[in-house]
Length: 145
Image (cartoon, rainbow, N blue to C red; front, side, top):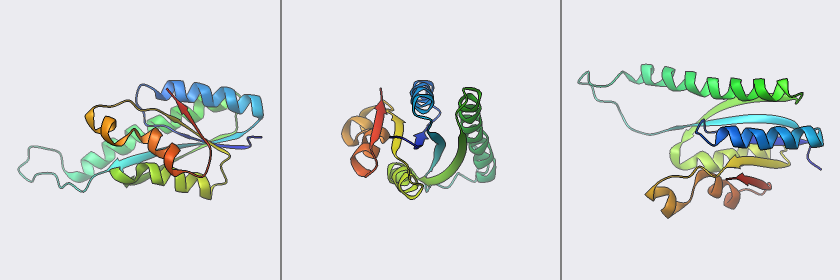
């Protein structure tokens, strides 16, 4: 039934639960897994008063963190005997959910596995990224609490 899974990881605390569900599902079905990390970017210029690092320094730090998330997940999946690859893409913060959907649909995913990503007041008002993925996608979504 499932041959191509997409797991969208944020690098937050729930990523280990999301990855555990993905690993077991992939092992049970023999599915391939695409680990996806969408790096949310904002249209905000850092100040020029020397109070914050320059934009290139911020991007390097975030890229390193994103790469660590993807490399760790692909390593765990591979160690469990799952065929896995990983990708990092950038999207505006408001477009993260739609980006996950577009990439999963374009890649022929049978299922998207994503965390619920609990948050504060904004999440309560507009829904978590995982909830938005579930609402937007034509691909079935497994929402891991």
